[in-house]
Length: 476
Image 1 (tube, one colour):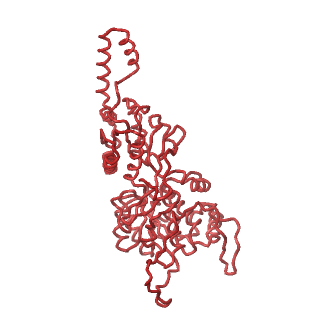
Image 2 (image 1 turned 60 degrees about the horizontal axis):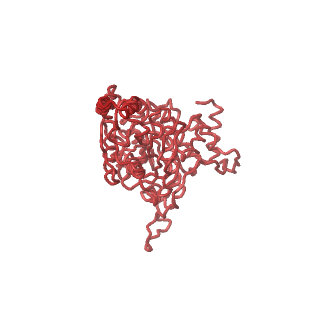
Image 3 (image 1 turned 60 degrees about the vertical axis):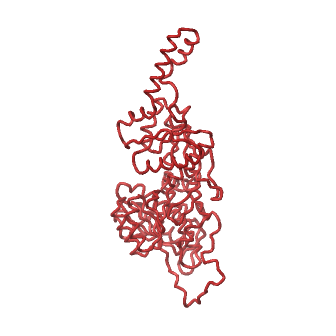
């Protein structure tokens, strides 16, 4: 936390924006979020420099420098499109709430506290850029644990939340979902697991099956016909394989080889050796050398010279290799494939949004690889503002937080009937465009995103097939 002068500046910034950030006493007091006066100051950029005080003491000023969030098309009217709508006199209308409460359920303490802090900061950027004066943003600590997530959900309901954003992890979403559904509070969770989505519980993460569908259709369009999959032996890996098989069948491709590995397995190299058919191909090379030696003619001698630099003969039984893993596990396993002659100059390596790392090209085996993900360029403005305030770019989950808070602000400021976060507004068919690009929420709780095809390069990531600009163009 910064000193008292920084705290004073933070309060002045909040007042200058005419906004309210409400902390909650349901979190660890070490987080210093219970009192707005002790909260960490918002980023410098959301607070405009010039302000004019009104006669009531409220400081009013125009907003400026917003990162940007918008409907992909104008918000449709939320009232029924019918000519016989009953218009009630003011005395019969339900009084509009003075404040609109949005609760953020984040891991603010525990092993995921660093991530939770980054997500909270991104949410505050959206809040100070876009929120109306009646919107109140609350924080509830999930500690990254299902039990604490359920407690945080109950606390949010007790505090009158109109919308819940979070939790982050699938198990935490499952733990909180029953409480939130029973209270009929719409929820924007950060998970990408379709199993936790349902009417009223929306997931925001880019869904793996949509990534695979987009990727394999691109692979088919480029003329490749066979794919091998080396996947983790868990629910995510099983989902990837099933999605790949479905899209491949519809696209004229064939999944020719599948292997599952235990994440972290120190013996994974032996499994990769078998997956690459390395011993079979090496035996084929030995047999070819013997046959050419026995012929003992000039052509055979030249052929032997060409084979001298090879470790095996022929390619594995696939033209593309899908590795749906990321992070340290991907970096650990990737070098084993070219070692066993899965040559990236002849075999196209493929991934998922887990490959959304501009430093991935430091691993030579992955250079030239393709994957489907939201275009990181959509996050550039948020990254610039986040870096200016906090010294590092925003992680992907922080960009999701920005979009979730921005969506809440958009619906609250444009609402015409006091319902704010009803199903029609949240599931607008044309979707929204924000820091994570084009997306829309579906009535079943899942989402759809405009995905680009990215290629790994030695100096970063490149878009080789742009994302659609509307869902009329979308193919994923």
